[in-house]
Length: 156
Image (cartoon, rainbow, N blue to C red; front, side, top):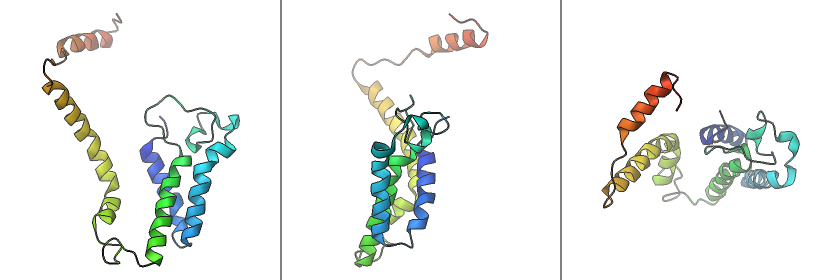
């Protein structure tokens, strides 16, 4: 198991919470530190699987869903800084109200949107692939036979 995007979102949200009562400049500074930390502080000491999630290792593990806390938390911290900056100037999403409009709704429902978008995209891409002229459906019978052999221990 790797430290994936959902882990990163959850931890970055928890780390951003203490920035909420602080001025926007503190959140911006935290974003800069998080963004630059891998370039400034990477070390072989962080190359162990137990510390890869921090983002200070000298290599990336081989996985598609690896998002270490630094530098990716910088986006969350920058978002906090931008929201506080806009709020301090009375620039809300709609008419000075930061609670209204599509952006706050997207923010409140980001996990659901994240979880829904993947199966939708997979389905759309699969449908597009089969609609192309000359595309054939994969032969599931062969795959099924190979899986049955593998389950019986017949590797070949």
